[in-house]
Image (cartoon, rainbow, N blue to C red; front, side, top):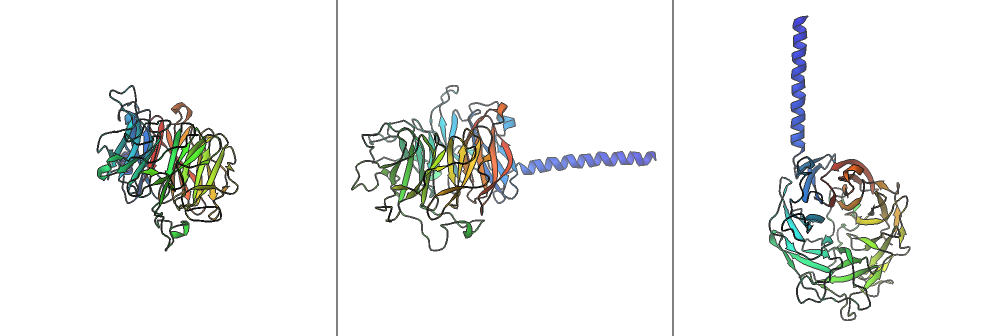
Length: 439
């Protein structure tokens, strides 16, 4: 009996060791990034002043910290020598770009745009120096990955000396993620107040590829459909309550006035009170703007061809019948907004209600209808939204303080056929996450 008890205890001890070793192996393996089976989320932490990366399994969604985990960097403040905000990743997933705002607490801190190389192991590195920029507020990139567009808030300083206007800047992207400011060729109407640009988005010149979900989920990837050769940029102005309409030179990136033979200044279309976010349909049909004070979404048809509602194929915007569309449920103060990569659904972040509102796009008219449920919960203080190109995963940063359950990224599995969101476990981040991007 005594021999059996000793053997039982020894077996239990060995079993415990095996279990602990197995857990250690699982944690070690799970915390690594494998590009063939994992996605990668990049998050800008304003509290710690750094970029974090997290891998997530493309099948299960299970997420693990790869670079700058909260356990190791929560006490940091000046890793990037500034405060990161808006964040984008290029179409190939090779480089990320972030706005870095000056932090008076960091020696030598400056405001500008920083590029980050996304390494094969899921970490990031800085290939060059910060590109100075006076007052960057939000970033956007064209679908070909050629140009980086920057909303400059109320800044009127031109990005390139001797050019006529500031407010919206364009950088041509070169090899190694180098950024070269592009001269502008536009002017604003003298009747407008000084603009306050808060968000922008360009029309596609590349359509979504046929991906994991197949052509049946994409409205513009069918054989025979070709993307447009003209490109337009739409910039949200929170001062004048309008969307400004620019034409983009697809060779240089320079912004000009659409139909310059007729118009002497940049045209615009009205929004509702205090527009906050903008998203362009990836199939070049519609534009959607979140109106933060009215809890509604303004919808527009892009005039890419002459029609009963479009006088010319000049990229001008015509309000969709029934627009603006009210958000249902408890949604409040809509901010960031995104169209899914296949052009079927719109997702709107409720910044005060801590929600996402999913809406179905009518493929013919562009009108919006709420899904059920009308809202899905986020964490406290949602700021930014990103959807992976396969249309399976969505991420939202929650800026709220740790004591209120913030400092996290909400993760959702998307059902492409219905647009439904399934809540996944939140990803814990460093203090005050703002920008988010995914590859």
